[in-house]
Image (cartoon, rainbow, N blue to C red; front, side, top):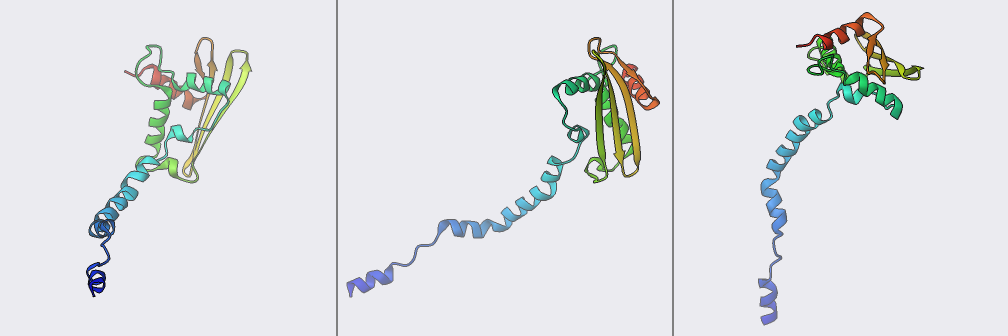
Amino acid sequence: MAKDKKKKEEKPKKNDFKSFLKKRAPIYLALIAMLVVFVIPEITKGTLEKSLPELSAEDQQVIDILMNYDGPNNDGLTVFEALENKINEEYPDEKIYDHKKTTVDLVVTNIDSDEYNVVFDFKSHKGEINYNWNVNIISKEITSNNSESKYIIDLVNYYD
């Protein structure tokens, strides 16, 4: 009889972790939903920098010289920032880099030992913007080959 009493008194122990989760499950679900809805899209948001293609080390050096060019005074706006601003002006209130028809093409061609031609094409569902520059890697001089690229260089050179 004593053994029967002990068995009756021993009830299965409650799982503390399970009861903890049951009480707080709605809170955790709400936090996960907020993370999925608000945080993840901001982290995965497309940008011009993420849209640029992978290049060889030599070509990347030329692109770095071009994109980091900030005028004769070496302060203010860079070519990369000017390109980003121009694209944002053309496509306000749109997530243009996330659109499936948006492509960014970057072609670097060696003209001679220290001069390269860089062609930057931005294509989207609304149209196309083409830029064409010559970059001298020794003197770091950049010359424009079309009106769109001249506008960007002038914007960078005369930015206050």
